[in-house]
Structures are given as structure tokens and as C-alpha cells.
Length: 548
Image (cartoon, rainbow, N blue to C red):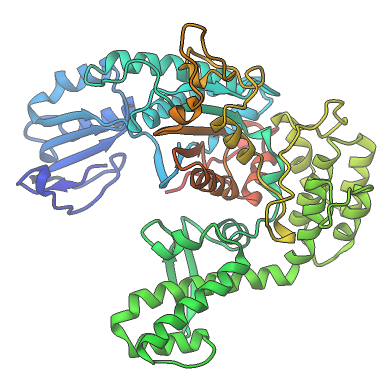
């Protein structure tokens, strides 16, 4: 990007315009320009084109900030061409997107195709994606001032292993080159790298916590929610700056529907502007009468609209689905009784004409996941009965992620933590697998065979809890380790909103260890199924869409 900046310099930046460096731009020769670019040949060539000669320079001078380490050949190319026009050239190592306070993405949705497509012709593309992801993950660690011990989930695929090895090598190289850094050895933090197939259930289950539910059921694009109030169409961005959104986004929809009207009544009673039951029309009138509280009330209106839109979708079709999904996912019903016949649980969903094909496919997948794979004959029968022959790859292609589809796997399903004593809603009994992993990592309970290390780590992170005979045994070694440490998680192929929520919940429960979760991108069930369907298609038939 090349936004012109004021003459006074960077301490007093005046943003006139933000432009795309890849597009033609009108020169603004009286202004200096700040370039925020990736260290690639394409970006550097575009920059050099802006400063082709003194008489043709687009701007008075340039401040260049690279999002990552700039290779010597590109740096020397800039130096040889237009060094006199450059006021500053700096690597700031932020080649990732901080999506939330504890969530980051690499913004590479195409990584899903390259990492899981069975086409051997994509090998070079996959290698390039792996290298790029490793570089980006290193910048995440550097931004956090961490040199973590790197671990990976060893089965069923080798993507996590390959990426972990690359990250470990690049971390080592980074901290050798970075002379200013005081971090040379490993810090008391861990980086866990996982393939997406580790928990297929959480990707297709209907979630009833506010954020996950809204992004699944409503057409929210680029975090923008469109709604109507007082007869007008409006837009609201769901972002971290909205303190009410941050406060309620991880709560169950039933709690949200109770809390927002309570908050509104508090404001209403303060000014005695309204009485009785809070409604959208009453809130609109209140806004007109109380300009001072307009901004505060607007947030309430937005989220009340959002919650009501979610509930309208829920009551229409989703409510009946949720019980079936929970029973299939957990293998037990709400009373804790084991499900004896998963097909009998599934059939009512398939026979219900009110459910669309996408919801039926999600239910079929949960059925297959619950029995750890099925026979070709059974799968063909399900596909034909529901008439989803054109969408059958949304089911079959899960095998490319290492998830048993056909035939049934002979290996037992991984054991889950017993959470039966935890208080929850009947239609929200499922807990994402990532939460078990986070808790076990913090408590030093991850199996070192299932979760190998790529490097030597501090003794307190060695996975065994063993203490050297030369060291004095300390009863509180876990507390020492957790003090100020971070658990960084990276999932290859997308994370769900429910998995993002787990990072906050585990951090809250283990206050001395912050959990930060990230991935190639953030997924919703429908988008994931579309991506799964395309895995066995040629690369030229697949379109990769990044968030703008």
C-alpha cells in the first residue's frame, strides 16, 4: 500500500488516501509515501516503478515497511535503484492478521486446497505454501517475543510434522539473525501445530454460542452485519472495539437474549424514558429522545437484532436438528444414555423436507464420524435417498483430511475428557476437541509420542514431568512454568468460531497461561463443505477468495 503522509514525518502522519500498490496511481510529488508491503518480487518491482527516475517519481520520498524478512537480493535491488529516495526501510514482522485479541490468521485460504488435495501435480504449490506459512508463523512468535518449543500432532497426516520442522528451523535462523533480540534460547511457551482433520465434528455441528451461531446462520460478510431498524437498512461491524460484542459473543444465545434487554432497561430506567417490556420500536424512540446515549443504545439495538435474527433461523429449522446433532456427536443423549442405533437417530432429519441439503449433509457427516466410518454400500444408499449425488464429494473428500469415511476405521476413536459434571445447555453439550488439547498442554499431560517435539525445550515443557536427578525437585514446577507463559496453537486448514472461543475459556480458567489460537483462515460450516467438495478437482477449476 502507498498512502501519502504529511511533510512533518511519521510522528505526525496525515492519511490522505490508502491505495493498492499493484494498481496504477496518480503521482503526488509534493507528498511523502508510506509503503506497507510484503517482501516479494512483485511488490518490490511495483515500488521501483514508482521511483523509476528523479523526474518520474510518484512521491517526494518513501518510507518502506516490510511485513516480513526481506531477502538480500530484493534489498540490494532497491538499494541500487533508488536509495536516495528512501527515508526509512524496516522489517516489522507482522505477516499475519491479528483477528481478535487471542486469535490470528495467515489469510491463506488456498492452503486448504494445496495441503489436502490428492493431486500430485500440486506438490510444488504445497511446498511453497508450507514455506510461506512457516515464515508467517515465525513472525507471530517474534511479535509475541517468544521462541516456543514446537510440537505437532503426529497422526493421521504428515502436514503438521512438515510444517513444524520448517517453523523450528526458521525460528532458529530468525533468532540468530536478530541481533537486538535478547531471546536466544527457548522461552517457556509452546507452539502446537495440528492438521484440520483432528476434529471434524466441531466444523459441521450447529453451535448455539452467539458469535459462532451468527456467522453460521446469517449472511455476515467481512464481519459486517446488515439489519433493519426504524424502517431503514443499516450495517454494523462486529469488532473488538465494540465492548458489548466482546462481552457477549461467547455466551449461549439463551443468555444473550436475557442479558441485552436487561442492559437496555437499566439505561431506560436511569432516564425514565421508557417503561415496561423493551422492544425494538421502544429502543428506537428512546434513541431519538436521548442523543447523549445514542451510541450506547445503538450497540444494544444491533445485538438485539442479531440475536433475534439468529433465533428466527433457529426456531424455523435448526432447533430440531440440534438434538440429533448432539446425540450423534457425543454418542449419548441428554440423559447420558448411550445411543444404540445412530441410523435411527439420523433418519428423522433425512426424512424432514424442511431441512435443506446442506443441513442433511452435515447430519450425515456427524453420523459417519460417530461410527468412525461406514461401508460404501451404506454411503451410496444415504446419498441416493437424500438425492445429493452432485454434492457427494462434500462427504467423500473428508478422507483426504485423514478422517475415516469409507471403509470404517478399525482404530478406536480418541478418548475424550469427561465433562458430564459441567453445567451446560442440553443442545450445547459438545465441547470442541481443541479444548481438551489446550488443557492437557497447559497441565503437561500431552502424550509425547502423539505430540512429538521438534526441539529441545525447557524441562518443565518436556512432556513427561520428569526432573533431572541433578536438579532439586520442586513441587510447584508447573506453576513456575505457567507463570507468564503462552500456548500458541496453529491449525492447518481453518479454525471454527467455537474453537476460537475455547482459547478465551481456557485462558480464563488458567490465568497464568494465555492461549492464542490461529490458522490459515477462519471457516464456517458451509464454506468448509464447499472447500472439501473441490479437493479432488483440478487446480484451475478452484477459485481462491481472500478477505479484502
